[in-house]
Amino acid sequence: MASYDVIVIGGGPGGYVCAIRAAQLGLKTACVEGREALGGTCLNVGCIPSKALLHATHLLHESHENFEKMGLMGAHPTVDWPKMLAFKEDVIGQNTKGIEFLFKKNKIDWIKGWASIPEAGKVKVGDEVHEAKNIVIASGSVSSSLPGVDVDEETVVTSTGALALKDIPKRLAVIGAGVIGLELGSVYKRLGAEVTVIEYLDAITPGMDAEVQKQFQRILAKQGLKFVLGAAVQKVEKGAAGATVTYKLRKDDSEATVEADVVLVATGRKPYTEGLGLDALGVELTPRGQIVTNGHWQTTVPGIYAIGDAIQGPMLAHKAEDEGMAVAETIAGKHGHVNYEVIPGVIYTTPEVASVGATEEALKKEGRAYKVGKFSFMGNGRAKATLAAEGFVKILADKETDRILGVHIIGPSAGEIIHEACVAMEFGAAAEDLARTCHAHPTYSEAVREAALACGDGPIHS
Ligand code: NAI
Image (tube, rainbow, N blue to C red; front, side):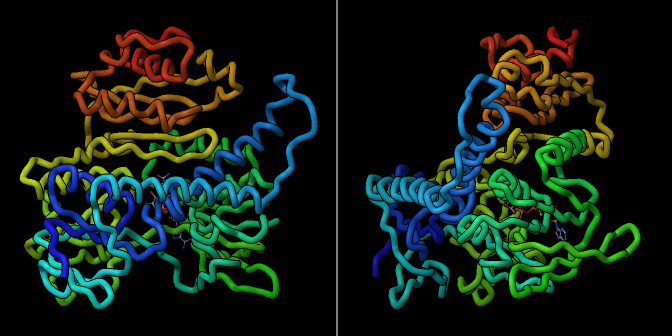
């Protein structure tokens, strides 16, 4: 039996970051992970592999749409699907091995297997019981399916199966117009599939700023994605080849079907806490199965903490990472802190979509007096030069104080340029602070400055 200051359960972005920070702060640390490789959902079957496929298929799309416009002539590339999947696997391997290296460098023990907690202070893996002064649960989440939908990861798939299909489907039906549905729907649309997205609500990407939702849907529809909105999926029936999705339109209760070779179920994720023994321990869960934690990520049982997708809040790798660092600092006697007001969200389609802070709808609901500064990428020199002048930057600032309350971007590299807004918001900046900051020309970031100028005396290029 080994004894540790901290045992982290789960080696995803929340868990591995927590383990590294704990070790850096001088705590004897182990991390339990049952997968073959470290990195959790994000590195193995989520963020990283999807970004590899999004990048490769984006280039394919560029070659079809834009190469000739720029004088790049010649045959269009064709797709070697097994090779593209091998590229994706290689990217996964490089990333997961990187974490293994960081564990060795920081002298963190990787305990291989699935953990349970027989009692506070003890973690059981296989037949071994390890002692830990502190336990951090970072067990993540799994896809949640729908009643009447059986996932087999071949014909009816979650994101995991969708990242490893044997063949590119001719027809893909996507249930849910959230982040996963739209990213993976884009991948297969670019690879030539006919993609139909069926969404329960009347808009795509729930929770996003409504103006962004509308423009995003218009752009994706122009790229060829078909949308059926306001439609509740009832069942998915597998046939000899493919499957039939039956949905009911909410406005008139009429039923309709979509035939597809593959059906992607992207209707959200739920915390994964099975097998940990939380019930017996008395660790409280919310009705949605999330582990209840206080402001210091402590569960209802002393000595047991929880972070990431297993607790409340957005299911985002970077939110889990921040909590991982903060809880390690807390355990080490420092003051761990996460600013939940400034957590960006990014969708890695083309164009990218990124947002941080309040939406216009949320401010209206709150009754807050605000102003809007908007700037279209049509007025941005770099975006024009790269044939990417679609979308806009929208800044919401307090009407009186000019403090930035929310930033919403749809456009080129939105997922990168959002961070200047994040830093500004961390410092409590006003829109004028962004507007008075010199921005290099020509950059996409200038669109952020122009939107900030639009909150004051007006932008220059519109
Ligand atoms: P999501 O919660 O973003 O979207 C699910 C969608 O499915 C919603 O729009 C919902 O209205 C719809 N839906 C639910 N039941 C339905 C039904 N019966 N019929 C039709 N539509 C239905 O969930 P998603 O896309 O599965 O992602 C899961 C989590 O993973 C999210 O929290 C997301 O933030 C995270 N994620 C983040 C990524 C990123 O940051 N780029 C990438 C991938 C996932």
